[in-house]
View 1: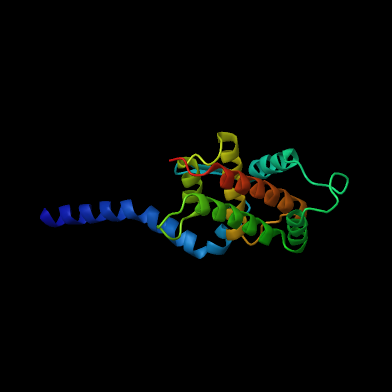
View 2: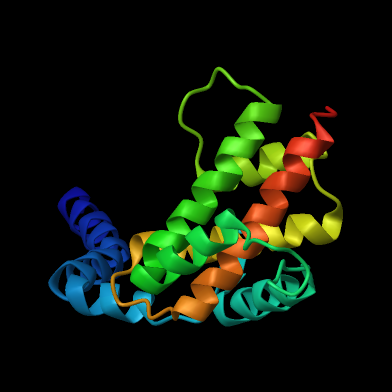
Length: 186
């Protein structure tokens, strides 16, 4: 019964491949719905990675409140950088978040130049950690901003207020200044 054996092997092979094929087909057919669903995720865990977008935003806002601000009462002129951040956050909160991340990238690459060209945001966080550019609690803020940056950069339905964007930019500026002051310590 050599022919029966070949049929059994073929049927077993097909039965093992059918469910992955159905999953791939379903993802393809429903890709827009899946993309919208992923955009609404507030928590994700998988592949050794975990992100909680709401908690990241809350931690960044708390950190922003702890950073001293200049006010008209303490100085004769308003901090031009703070005014720029407020103006940008009111005009485009999403652009503010992306600009805040760019500020951090710039600071890291000034202190730890690399010849590798493009580096993903995750690789940039790892570089900051490996060079000991920030203390652990500040590294968590950096990771939070990375998560928020990725959400803004990759999901069109993200709703972020100008106040939230300003808080993110304020913390990013603080981190960038801290990085520039720290120097690279491999």
